[in-house]
Length: 516
Image (spheres, rainbow, N blue to C red):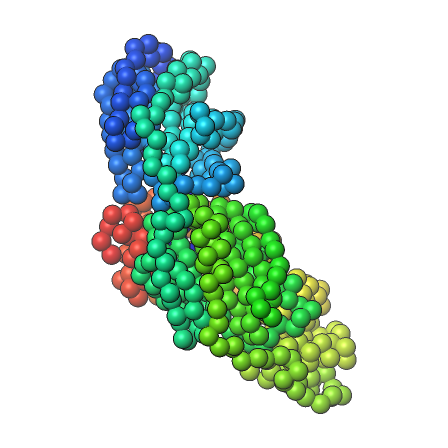
């Protein structure tokens, strides 16, 4: 849950503190004309006090509450107009965020308001029914929202139609295009590349072997990520390698929109577009993987192309291949192959380790530990299917191998199969009840499955076993926040900051209006 990634997208339905009684509502029969010069619209709303609010993300909300029903117009400006081919994606993302985890989508209908695309949705959260009409006018999103209790749905429909149909623009918000971006030349000697990026602060972060160079604008991020592999990917394995990276980028909640393989000079590349919305160009240069990523619903394809096409290598990273390393002379005993494989693994020579473990299995196919060890090497190499197969075989030979359950759980989690990961972590804990990492990783899998209470319980167990690990407090804080338990989330984020000045927790506290 941590990392540089910035949550970029439409703020579609914010939490509104509207006090709605559970009793019946009478139809609002008296209407008033509401004109909002700053928002550039006029609309009919029920007679009542007009409240205007603006949150820290520049989302403006105009509300009238009457007879247990709330009518709202919200609007937000983006940096640039959403392109026609991105409209459906933007609306889909908005719909998903509006429904959330506890809602139910009743209906959805796309259309137009004049020349501008729109979507009407009806959703239900408990007994609350919400009608939301989204209208995308160049770089501005309007939302016309009406909400009332379940028993008032039929009455509300007529009022909603009157509300929606009365909406009109006073002026068209100014368009924005990719030409508004100003560009700078960025040279990174250590990374061995030069590229054009939008004007802004260039931030560089390193997390283990992964280096990220990024420029973040309001709702768009341009970044280059690179990492050195242990050895060059063999030509026959390039497609599978790109597949694994693509699957990891898409994750559980994403959707791969398009994928295109090609070359940058002599080096293999792949361009992928992930809903909602990220563009990623991967370039494999010997044993180094570069990823050129643009994220945000407002980015234009012209800007993406300019960013991608400007990339050039200052020097070619040193070549490395399996032919550069002699794994060793043929041996006659399985134990000897295992010993040499372990040495190769310790030296990060994964191909040699896999080759020697394979030879050991040929000589002794009943040794479950050998399958387990090769599964671990496969996992470190990103070969998840092979890793899962080896862990499974290890468990067939020894069903009490808790480490194999844990390893397979990690492989399932990385393969975006959280339910299978949960099952394996559970088996691990039956065999090893004090395995703090199994609690933590199962908590992460529960979180990704939307089971927040279970995730919180597992993070709590992990904290009890190791109260000094800030990751446990941070992730529990995120789960508490997602579950609507704000005070508990704040307490966990503050604890993470107090232990090790956790930057992610400090950022969460700022977002929640708290001092780290």
